[in-house]
Image (cartoon, rainbow, N blue to C red):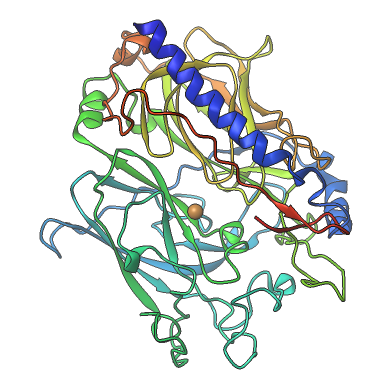
Length: 468
Ligand SMILES: [Cu+2]
């Protein structure tokens, strides 16, 4: 029985992979051909000089909700701000970033945003306020006004380049709370008339309160910006953060020690980044093809530096025990095929959940492919290991066979010691024996499998992706 189940899981993971391959092979390999690469190469020059594993991993703060303002609901207020103090690396100057602002931990945290922890069945309401500066966007040079949504109905570029809206990725929400690209809102103080009657918010307010019912499986969701015509910039600028949804069964597993909780549950937000190593500024490359349909726009962004929770090549000191790592690929286009390397081959780990909830049971893996936007819930046991473990990657960009290459190292786990008297209860139950919260199957027995292919249409001349 268990074997059968294991096969099912394996099939699930393999099917996903095959699916991704089908998507990935059509044209992605040449998607980047020739556009905006000069900047990419320029910034790559000094990478060898950037020391690895000198910055500790930063854990985004978990926000405390106001539980009394609205009955039966967790309420938050999150300003969306620009910061000038975030350091991606010890040896880089501070960088101008955008973020969902939470109480910063020591050292400053002005990138990405606070983690929201919600519980199934208890609604969350978040008032986001746009406190970005009016006007100029952080990636102003890369704005292509030929992209739909870049101009108003009179053909003028939007005054409010720093428009925002918030999308809870993977969330089951009402349309009004989905953060559709057209439902953007402006920086504080802006009073631009609302030109579209179908938008409740656009241009006429500086904040919007989203309601999340949390009526779905426990999982890691994420919230990120989704503003019209500039969504590709904003999560790179920093507007992306985690939203952990728990349910009673999961909470029980944490309380009883079957799943690591507290500091043993670590969010890992993977991104790639282009940074001007002189100034510390983030770079968004542009195409230089005047006369083409979109002269500035590039189809995919690839950075040459791995960034985890806002730090380049960070390290994290762990105890020799089991950890739960909540992976999110918050990159624009980069896939990661991750593995843990202790010096003698990949260290096996377990996947216990993916985008929308737990797997039926833990699946043992050596490597794991994570596409942009995807989340994976991973258990890894550091007990019995010593020294430093590297989190590595061997996925090409564009995936799977592109020529942009990849950084093979991402971050380092340093195996420390266990605190005295800490008996890691969690390690006593073998991972295979953990019963995960069951998910009701939505597929009737003998339902035929159908393959759905999403294809990218390329320009016959340039080979650039045109539509999908
Ligand atoms: Cu999304």
